[in-house]
Length: 124
Length: 126
Image (tube, rainbow over the protein chains, first blue to last red):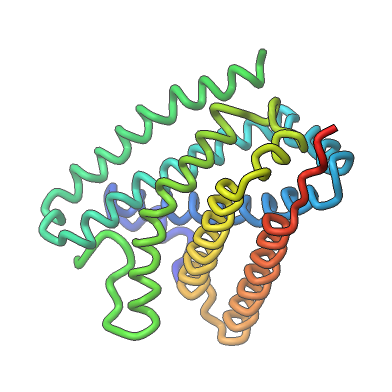
């Protein structure tokens, strides 16, 4: 059992942080998947019920959450590529620090413009 | 150090779970990012309504896409949360209870989602 304080004091470096972010993003996306299944299942009750529900998803708070969701999936995906590279080609472990920074750079480069584009519909 | 993710298990079900996470992850890279790109960026909740889904589900292609995405995402997600629970929930009773709830929730929602995708009837064109 890891105490919360140990997260802050353990100095695992960038690999440690990418591991924490990977878990947080994964659990967050999973929780959204559960809700998303329920809302899509409502389509079986016809257009009235389904279209009524969409007002909820069009609310600014939900659309901001949607941007966070895209960020979580994107980070989990790019970091997942790093995990696969190192696990399938163990010799790349020598580059692990560079790969971790590359994940951060690629994530920021893709997420910032995407987030600005998505938010432009919220504040129109 | 022997890898970036969870250390590769020696054998058995844990080894298959470890391999599955990586293979399904690569598939989800295309399926989940493709889904986000189409449904949340190119289109977005301003365009999506019942009519949009009805047109999308008029042919089997997107139903199959969504069904494969749903199953891979759910199994990938349940297995990921299982790893997290095993890491943090050490008391035996709580661990069993939390894992059982996870499996039950995953199973029920996978069934509900599959049913929604497979049984949806697009209304006749007006």
